Structure formats: C-alpha cells, structure tokens
Length: 226
Figure (tube, rainbow, N blue to C red):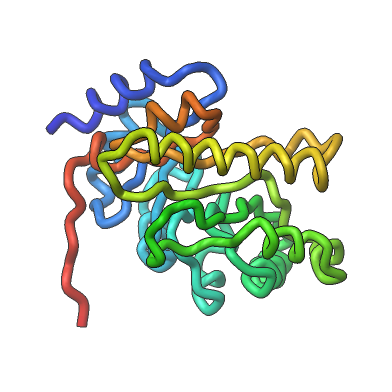
C-alpha cells in the first residue's frame, strides 16, 4: 500500500471547505512521514501518550488532533501542543483541558462529541446535556478552551440511509448550537463526521473534517501492552 499516493488521491476528491484528518493511531512514525511527504499535515490519534511520543520525533508543523475518548488524567500529555480535541463529552473534561492549557499559556480548540449512533457503546452528549453545559456558570469562566464545533460517529452498519440520517441529525445539532449559543462567532464552524467507509455521505451532509485511517494506512495494527 502506497500511503503517499493514497493521501494525494483522497485529498484530490475532497471539496473546498473539507479538511482531511489522517487517522494515524497505532501506526508508526514512518507511516506518518510517508503521508507527510504526500502533503498531509493534519493527523488524528486516540491515545494521548502515543500522540505525545510521535509529536517528539515528527515535524513540528504537524497539526495534531485527539479524536478518541479522553480521560481527564491524560490531558496533561497533550496540552502543550494539541491543535484540536474532537471528543469533549462533559463539562468536567472541558474544565480539565482548560486547567492544563493554562499551564502552557495556550487556548485549546475543542469539539463537543454527540452520541448519534444506535450503538450504546458509542460515547457522546445528548443535545440536552450539551445545552446544560453551555448554560452553566462554569463554562463562561473557561478562558483557555474554545468550542469550535461538534463531532459524532455514525452507527457501524451497511445501511447507508441510516448513516445519512445520523449525519443529518448531527448537522442539525451543529446549526442549532451555532445559531443559539455562538451567533456571530466565526470560529464555531467545524463539523467532524465521516470515516473511511462513509465520508462521502458525511461530506454531502455538511462535514468539514473527515477522519480517514484505513483508506490511507490500511488496517489498524494493535500491539499488546503489559
């Protein structure tokens, strides 16, 4: 599999306004370097320690996105360099990100993750939970985080109409939040949805960030840890 050619091909198919997040989780730095050689600069990881290790050895103009579930205790590993955290699913986590970002005199951009799939194993907020977060007394006091959009993962299914409905639902949530809580804030513009098997549908439903791993790097590689 030629990673560089895959990157160039996929990037050429994306319309204006849609950015590619190359999902490099479980892949070695050499694979990221190959994608980098193809012009890719945005990479997504789901393990903070793994992302921190890669950050140390790879070019510093890479834009790192944390796309997996994030535990509060692990925010410290990425707070000094992460560009965007896709998976904020609680006010407590947002508070922790704010606290760690302050230590580095940074403001970290974040997305609110919503549960749009039928599978109970998927994480994320309901609209009611998100609105409670945004209306809380705590949220306005957070000065080292900035909410710039939403993220969601569709059901793993062959039913493409179901996937489309779920993406459309997330788009509706995005529009509602933007109009209700972020009116006039141009920074609230990101809709992160779509992966290797469904990103075409996601783009049709308004995605601005597509998270693609398998179609670039091949199947994931898992390593046992003690």
